[in-house]
Image (tube, rainbow, N blue to C red; front, top):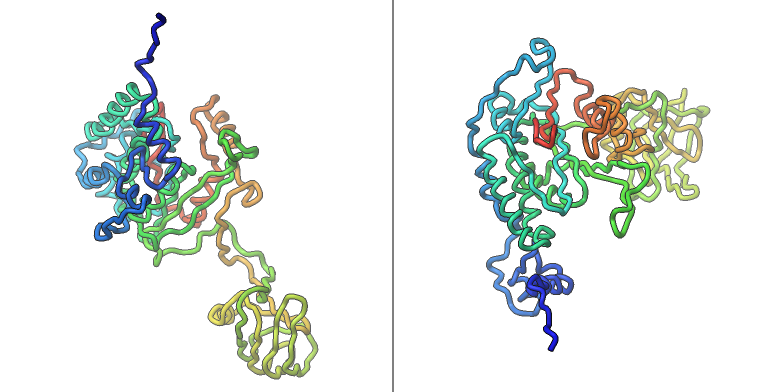
Length: 433
């Protein structure tokens, strides 16, 4: 009689059941575990509402918070022999576990950093651990690494879900809390990230910096040709999350200024109809002296109506007049333009007023970096720059010089006294500050 051969490493029945439940009800599974209260609700059972509250939490969050509060036991030691122009350089390079160094910087640099840019490790979905190799306070992360390794040895799929989001958040949480302390009141932080942890990063930053201090999500077109590793789409972009320390103290982010004589039409088809009023002698008319009666000046998709009689003498409006239309600017902006002695010009009937820039005014930057916008460099350009510097490719997925330069310029306005911090540099796969 032939024996039936049984594989002792047969399929994990529980894991398969969880997978099937996740396919049916994705909302009940978080990091590979079933939320039984959510399962009850999905199946129509009553769930007690008294426990409901909006919160963002994960395993290890309280420990990560305490870690950010614990003082450092480390000391900074200068290595003059390994430094370049030690006595005259204006750059400070610190080698060590960045969590410990951020703690050491609290005393001397709290409230002094104008801009922080970081490019933290991306959570690829494989076994994520940010291994610190510098000091005792990192033993918890090492212990987590050992636990994950043991679980992956017994269950090859353990790291597909597991605690990979929690591990990443536990790494980021204390570092971002300490980083916020270092920013000036008008300071800004930029964080490069891909889509794996984008949602969690923004929730984390909302908690640390406050939702009101979220600026925007910059989109960086990192490739000239898309990567087709994703099973659904060819990916071209990554993101840069941007928060300020205090939105009330911030300013326009700018890479360029307006050109002299550039015209900006006040009409903007599709906006809500409203009335704007121009005081006497505030509008220049490229027209003969005349009296213009109230009338409908709409044409095509542009809606404009002159509401009162207007007298034009020597190219200026002698009296106050009002126009109804779909305007780009509100009355307060018109008042600001007039107060700044900027020109508003009307060249013909029907009236189409233009705001004429004197040139040199701050122009707010766009939230996209691409070869089309700002002629932005890509990953391929960054790799070429690295090879030119070192003779070989030192980093995976480096950021190009122009991307970082643009962020610094937009925030500092070329202020040479501004202090810029990056605390996720890596050499030989060791975390640096």
